[in-house]
Image (cartoon, rainbow, N blue to C red):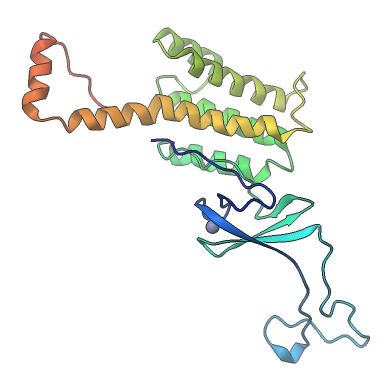
Length: 236
Ligand SMILES: [Zn+2]
């Protein structure tokens, strides 16, 4: 079932770590240089003739590091924003997405801050591939959504699909939606991709799995009750 995702917030005590994706306690600190001479070890910097002004220097307080209590990895922040690692705080892709879609999704996360529009276009492509997994042809998003809607889906899922489609399109072409300055809207697109996958793939798979685990006798009785109606085959 879906777990709530708590994205990293500056100076928060606990959130989903961008390094390990685990909801974990975070320790915070400012940064200080540790200048060494060449002879003092593998991370030493070359000895300078002049006195090195970086010896034990406190970095400005805008530079901050958080350390995850679960994976012990560091995340570097500047001006309250994550500057390392490159991939930013979006939900992990739904497990049931294909590897190809997960790669696109993660690539979009990596470029989100530098180019929200490019990230939006990649997410639109992710949607195109996702539609192929749930009954579309994977070529024309608009046509695929039409077919899937005709088969009967929750209107919220249709809205989610259309939001990703329109944002993705406006991101790639000059349009009315200003994705350029605002990664927040694009961040929502990641959530929508996961929402669509959860509703259309994960929930269905989970119910199919549970149904399969019913005793044979019960399944046969259901079959008889439905008067020989064909048993729906799981395709997940
Ligand atoms: Zn971690």
